[in-house]
Length: 104
Image (cartoon, rainbow, N blue to C red; front, side):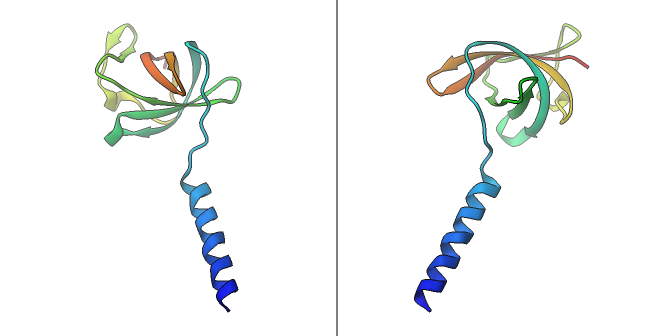
């Protein structure tokens, strides 16, 4: 009985971990084009899927520039499904977005 309960708890924990975990990739510093997969407005964070199927997790900083058609825009302009160009700097295992351009 105790073993069955423990197995159930372990299975539930594993499912929760995979359901909540976002699989992301760390790439080299550079410029990448992709599609906004998810926008976390409360964290000023976006997930971008690149053309080579990598998922980039980007937390905006006060230095991140966000533009559309050459004009600075607010974070609220970002929507899932938009095409973007991101310039990132790799810092350890983290990617810092230098600039994000909304392409459409």
